[in-house]
Image (cartoon, rainbow, N blue to C red; front, side, top):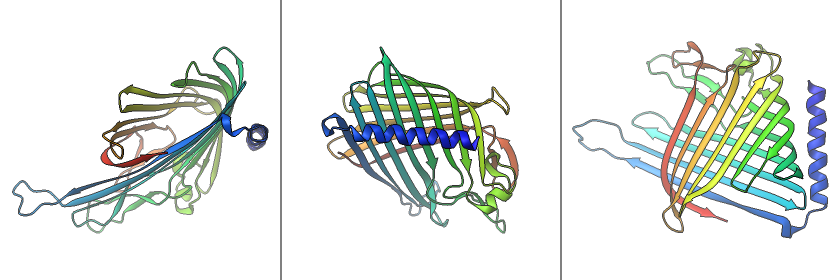
Length: 294
């Protein structure tokens, strides 16, 4: 499996290098968006109760896409980090994301492309399940590169327009890294206790939508589906992300961001350090803040 992953990685690097050698800046489309949002709740003698709270989220999205003849090369990176402080509790992170993907396609005819895809996901900082009872320690559940997920695959990509694409790969190597001894010793994220790396071989489907649904309102959605051939075939890992971006004026925006994740190999550990088994994970963030596109 490791040899398979190394061979596919060499193929990705080689194809990317070939495309870059022939690049002409007139065939590149580059850009991105940086945004920051804040919220505050302040209560004084409030009869209804509640806690003072302040939060902030920062986001950086970058893309660089190359199209010339039958060659298509898409690159994107998404970085997000958020902090929240509520009442007497300490500062805690609310969102944490590092995502990078690169996809090279060679047009077969019509709207189909022979495609090689690599993507990488992890987070910046440690994450905890915070104890709700005095005297109980918070439970560390993640860290930088713990986990980190990588997919390396070859398949076909259907792109009828710039708005939608559907990628299907029957040859996918999924790699999970847990670069934290405390977590790896517990066998977190589907690894055997003490291991820092796990590889899987299976099939991947990835669908992407990027559409202006009305004036100044943009909808982005990505859905990833993966199943392992050798272990629990038919159990599908799901990652579905949706972002609705509403432009108020040149700098002010409102966003709704949701993420739904299910992985049969990832158990939920509650605030009392009790293993609840695999669970559907869901996150929603609604914010208003400053944004700049370039």
